[in-house]
Length: 377
Ligand SMILES: [Zn+2]
Ligand SMILES: [Zn+2]
Image (cartoon, rainbow, N blue to C red):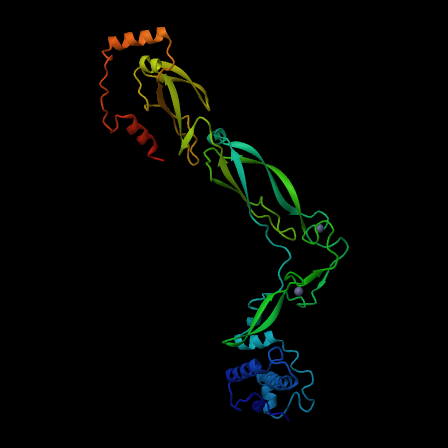
């Protein structure tokens, strides 16, 4: 009859916890994964057998009453049945050995999100637009319907990880022997190996494709705005659920308008005479040509506002304004008659010998006005 208490090195009145701890100590020292060699293996079989009996209340009771479940038959083969993760379970409680492995992984997983850039004209941002978008993406394989196997074939259990999806490794650390598990490379952690990969998708369950779609761009978007299209991204491996598609907007530079928030700024060159006399100037906007009323005596830098003709607010309703900045043009290349008329005008206005008054650098000057117009940038 074996002395299991001696084999484990515990007293006869040892508690279940003492027995567990003793086995843990011994296994850490003797497990074949940790300590290869016939001597350690033999010893490990002995402590494993002792632990098997003493950790099971029914077996322990029988043993204490004089019956040995392994009596005389020897320890042949015993011990191999205990994988190192079983030992780890004994150390840390049920399932601890699987803490990192978590069993085989599904071949199917969610597709990646995709980000594409969409160039827009300013008019598209003002009103919103429907745009065609061509994206390179992945879709489910129609030959194998995501299984990755050649039709009529199947999978077999991975011989490297025995279907576990992970491979256990023992490493030495300052804590002693530490078991780690890493995903199995042979089966991509799925526990199953495809015998004949689908010729269409090479076993991935999905194929690359180019897809054209029409997307609705809301009014008010600006460069950097991202539009999320849920479930329009790539199909995942194994025909898994689609990721999301993000469309990042880039608004092209407009030759006429500069955007500030939802307002659009433009500079209007006005002949000196029109600025002096006042005029109605046709002004093209995204809503068609508007009559721009230029008051007589307008100065360079003065603003004319066209309300509600700017960019639509992205959230909420209403639109920004168009703000036209006047820029008075001084005539050049005067002919004799024009020069004569201007000299007459100068004489009539007592401006033949101008003093050139220095303007207040505050709001009255053109620099002040320009500064005000752009300081909100
Ligand atoms: Zn396929
Ligand atoms: Zn494997």
